[in-house]
Length: 442
Image 1 (tube, rainbow, N blue to C red):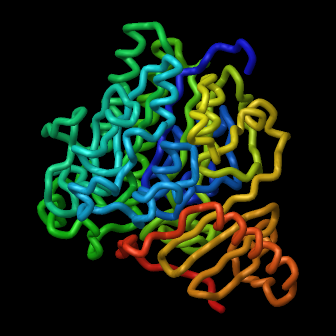
Image 2: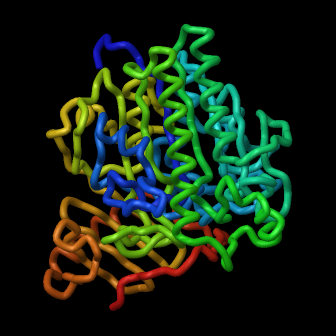
């Protein structure tokens, strides 16, 4: 980047949003019209990645990678699939405050830092955003909360300002959007160092509630999974509410003349869940099939990214974290080298690409995966698969028997990578209940 000005950064993360749920990724319009006009516009005026992935097909492990720019497997808390309310009071199941994070490294480099939205990386008093590099925090600590009562799945109120719980009336998606706008307004009112804002929505994660569904809060309070409710129309509206809020954020940037020099990144923490329309991908949350890990990746930065760009560069969550650090001129800690790789060269020249093998493993169903070039090695329930992803995005033509040499080479490559990671702890938990799965058949 040379002597280029350091950008403000807004890193927006949706929750359980599928790859093809946005209009710009081929998503179907809703009954009320376009589902994601604001995000579609960001993609049209920025860059859209077609082969971007989440570090995990479930929420908190991806968030460990997002925060550290390293494979989540390096940290004990990320072995939980995902962290749940049973970890309250734990001193090990969370993001250790002494571990460098994107926020702490940016803060060290002179950035002002804020997290608005979901944390899901361990509970106070041992863990929390203010202990991991953020100057301020507003949002829930746990994985899923009701949009109106702001209670978690165990019935506890879970909305925080800093390290203090505080009640706030309103629909959570809108509260987060308005707080993000307030943050931008305050940063603009005190110009100086650039800012880093993590905006982590809970939408469109269950329970299935739109702005008009306050009455449902009482109905679902004992079971936020809301297995008996929801529909595609509600799901689309939940995405649209988030999209509208992102429009408010962009409007605030424009109002203060900040849009040109702000890097805005958008993605999802994992693939879609119950009502996601992921065509042509198969599977969803908790699966290492494409539907569980391939996610939208949009970046908007008028000063550096030309409008209408599309990239097929392979990348995953922690690469974007490394990209943010690179753009900001922030140095990694030598004791915690990054696994993520900066994508700045691709942002500046979308025609460029580089080899980027991507590795995953899941305790759930003994899953493992490696995407390397056109090919993907996958193991589920002890069965090995080999897919050519550009030719078979739906992962239905298993090439393992036709190309045993490639299968063996990719399996060996995965084993070599896995040997560099700590093993999955025997006491790691898997929390199910995330909807119907559609794994490939043998």
